[in-house]
Image 1 (tube, rainbow, N blue to C red):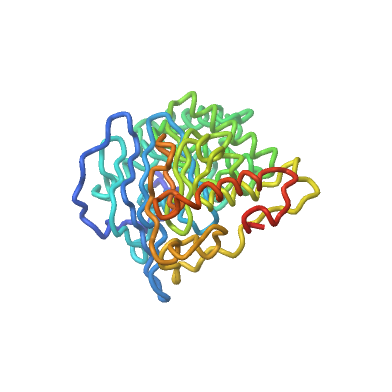
Image 2 (cartoon, rainbow, N blue to C red; image 1 turned 120 degrees about the vertical axis):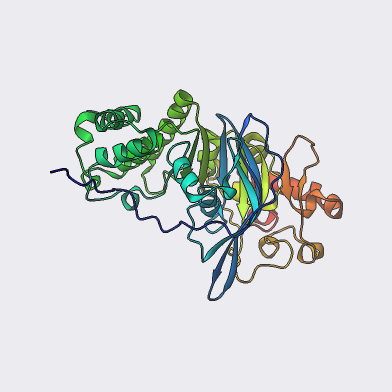
Length: 383
């Protein structure tokens, strides 16, 4: 009697087409793997509409690494889930935008086409592995199922690929580990399983959504080093979502900073971390504790992230910004190329003609705030 196979995959409740039929622009150049254009994802709930992702645009080259940073609620994870088409519609709505992946527009694909793409050419590592793995199936069964679905191979070949994937991410005795269940492993080992599962079909794009959040510092360093080495070996592009600027400095080529659903700064990692142009990015950098600041008061960004149901009418950072003036509450700042002309973008009136006279003083205050002996009152009010 033939045994009926039981799926280990989570029940898919996201099989809804986007709410738009986009009028597509030209495809990106062939060296661009992922190109997101003016993406807007809203959630319609009882209290109103939440603009979780509001006009986000970026591109990621083949084999490159892009970091997305920002506070909780800034829209980082929703951006990734929109790219993967893993949002429940409704209440979610992909209101507008284009997502080009490997020369194909994702939002115009059917769900059957998306299932062939997800886990194969495009894979995602989720934040909490214990909630992403099925507790009643072994690690090997869960990895090999994905291989069977996408690569159309035999069960023996899929099982061997599962062992190979675990070996790739540094598992000792992978032949034994594939027979274990998720609860028999530590948090770091489970996260390695998630990485192995994502890599099992050799995807062109790997999306890592805060892969080290639930891990201790030692294991965090191991996972980050693993991601870096695996990317070098496979040539995959990496989209890394995090709130840790230290991780960004170590891992990525380019970075975008998000706040309240919008991109507030974008550039190379050196541009953004060494010469930030947006006050929000400045505040994030000033608030990082360092050995040089030991014994001094830590800087903070005053206030809290605004309610998504009651966003400021113009600049969304204006209520918390130490450099805000009247124009910031009246005119929404565009995302503009900064004064150095090297491709760095910032969403701030300090980079437009409205704030040109204030820009020098603001950046001088930021530099002073980074000095280890700088008194809190000279940080431009961020303390």
